[in-house]
Image (cartoon, rainbow, N blue to C red; front, side, top):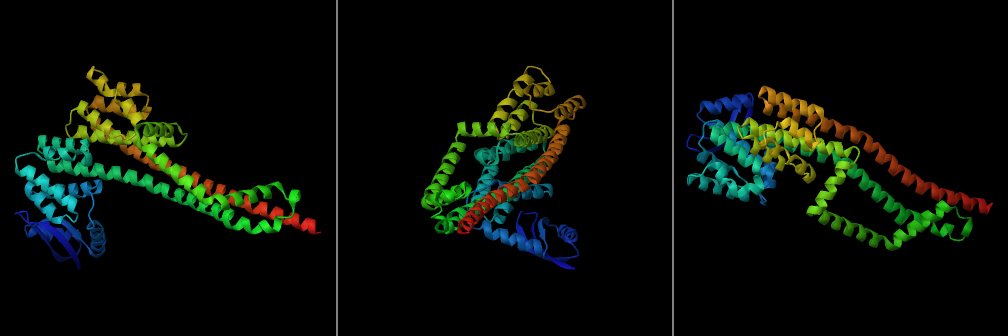
Length: 406
């Protein structure tokens, strides 16, 4: 037997916390349900420690984030699926919240719901945080009377999108570390190691090898103007970041990323994955196809691709088929178009779009792995060649000194 900590709600919507002995988490959950409670969290010792660490981090406050939205959406889906009413579920979530901004958001949602508003209408002021996709999914669940099921699908969608985004970010950490180490190594060599040999080569004049002279000049310049170079680099990075935040900068950078040989294909598939999963999820929950196309297009972060996909909706309004409209954009490969055609012909467009998203998910992950498999040794090789060049240049100078001495 093991001890589990639990959080559960009773039929009145009150939050109850405690501990229970059971063989495993499933047994603990069954025991709580037998007591008339609605389990929200059942955690063992290790998971409880992780939760407590996360709670300490969240207690500092700050604005509500998409991670917070995912967390309370998951918990809300569990409580609604267990039969708790929406207002009682929101009360429990307010009591569970360890972040003031999230508690305030949930309290305002509760007040709106108690005043007779639907949850989708209560979420309208928070579109900037949750997004159009979230609001429309909730509205479709309310219309069909399947809010708990729709929230569960919404959680699955948000988790997959976060996992895909996190995998890309994680994949770039190691190359970024390699670049940083290379930059620091070169700076140390030029700023501290190379100048140590300057006195040794001072009187050699034209007898000094050209490569050694270039390295010495570079080391002297870096030592004299190092702060200026670093300051210039930081200023350039700040200007580039500001430019990237502007509309023109985003358009230019996104265009460049699409034209890069390997990166462009990965970026395109990543954006198409977001579009296909969003559209498939919306259609599967009863959102009209024209509205679903608009929302799914808005989920894409690349403005150039978004402009290309905005032509699909007018073509659909004119009576065209979605597969033909997608083909005219030139953004979809034959596999994607064939899956969409099959979905249209069989009446399972939502299923085919979600299947397309799964296929492209794997393609993006595999492409990133292959790219890193090539990039990492390439970075190591370049870094080694640069440092080896510096060392060989110094050795050439030392050998020249020995020749003169002989």
